[in-house]
Each structure stands twice: as C-alpha cells, then as structure tokens.
Image (cartoon, rainbow, N blue to C red; front, side, top):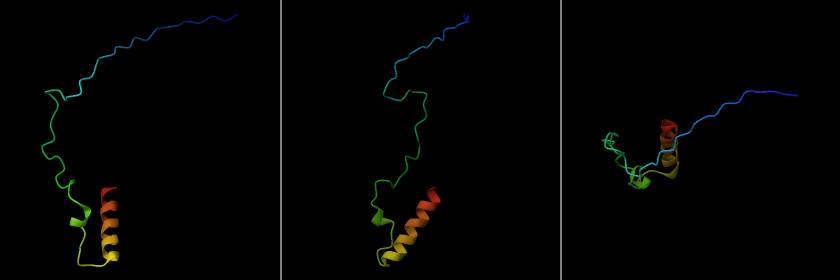
Length: 63
C-alpha cells in the first residue's frame, strides 16, 4: 500500500501581442550593412585565396 501527498501547480497563460510594447527598447543601430552583398566586403582585385582568408577571419571574429 502506498500513500503520497500531491500538489497542484497553477499556470497563467497571457496572450502575446505581435507588436513590441511601448516600454521595449528599439535597437538604435539595427545592424547596418547586413543588406549589402558579401562581394562588397571582399577584395575584388585580389585572388580567391585572399578572399577566403579574409572570410575565415570574419567568421572567426564573429564566433
């Protein structure tokens, strides 16, 4: 025979508005340059090896 004590946990569900609230901060700098093509950042007059090394440096810096 077993005996136990149980308890209930209450959960409140609040609907979420898709638009941000007025108290939420808006990013003053919304990452400019993300819409630019990658070719604009890579040296066009250099070889593919130089561009690959530069791209590896960018990826390592962002990691």
